[in-house]
Amino acid sequence: MDSAAARELALDAAEELFYGRGIQAVGMDDIRGASGVSLKRLYQLFPAKEQLVEAYLERRDARWRGRLAQSVARHRDPEERVLAVFDWLEGWFGEDGFRGCAWINAHGELGATSPRVAARVRAHKEAFRDYLAGLVAEAGLPGALSGQLFLLAEGAMVTAGITRSTEPAGQAREAARLLVRAHRSPQSDE
Image (cartoon, rainbow, N blue to C red; front, side, top):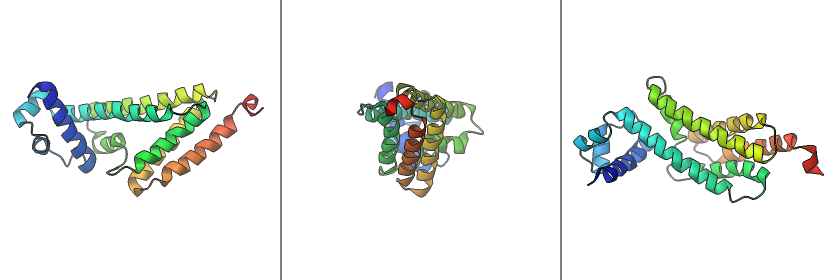
């Protein structure tokens, strides 16, 4: 098996196990067993578990943001694209195996002890905030609204992860709709 294939198998196993059980509850031997990649090869690819966690979060980030952007792009109206973020979150919250936000979970487990994991989490959250800021700008809404929408989305993620419910997404969407309406430029109402 070449290194690229072994890396993907290890990352697939890490994603399933870290997200499903928690990072600290999973050892490299668990990754070996689930991936079929030998421990020697795992440590050649990822000399420390922290590096595997980073790679898992980085790969998940690209997938997560790609799925979100693809869903939001289906909407033509710029204001609807802003609200579509919350519709997508609702679908994500309803997926089998949803266990909350992988980055919030990782930060809760390792953020205080792993600067590298904390940096990966911050990068994901900054990219999500920047994405929201872009949607807000495209809709001609005030830039300050992006921070408010970010907090609504993040709060919905935390609450959905704890309650195992999709309801926080709908509640956050309604709050976002009210904020968008309150910040809409007067010309757009004419």
